[in-house]
Length: 240
Image 1 (tube, rainbow, N blue to C red):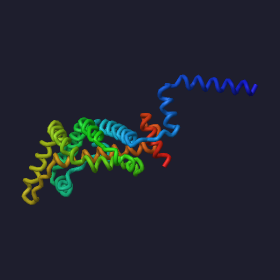
Image 2: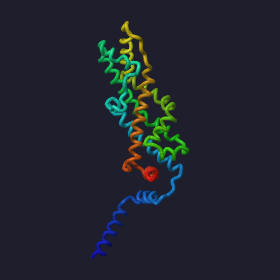
Image 3: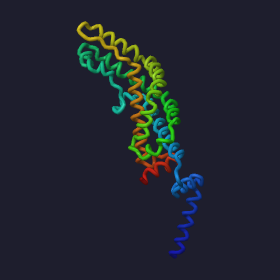
């Protein structure tokens, strides 16, 4: 009887394996068999993880309140204006301050929709030389590398999107009105921070923060590894 049950169990397990996608099972088994990872494999796996991270990050950030109600990435007033925010509110400019805060975050949210192709292009330029050290690095090593090597290029490409978005949502106009109203007060020192540069910098910081969170997720949670290559690459990291 026991032998019969054992044979039945083996038969049922065989049916289950056949029912699975043959190519996927084969791919996983080949990875589990310890096939050597090349530098190209590692670089490609990391790029897939980063593309997944920026795709989810830009989608999250581009929703209404994606910046404004996310404490991790919400954009505050420029530092020069933050120093006088309480003064502006005490002088009756509180509603104008709140309008600027809302619209600059709306501008960042709108611009985030355009971020993905810019980031993806930068990710694809990553060389294989740093791939192994990134894989064995901290939870945000790939994001840190991307930030260090692409920020200047991303800023140059992303700023026109931010500028256009700020104009569309009225942030530029509301910001200019607030600056003029504050500077018209005789007892105050004039302020006029560069809004486009400031929001671009903060928006990129926010997107990098979301990408880093997703990278950490992929490193720590195998269920977040959505391709066989990612599973192989990060399984090698798990084994370290």
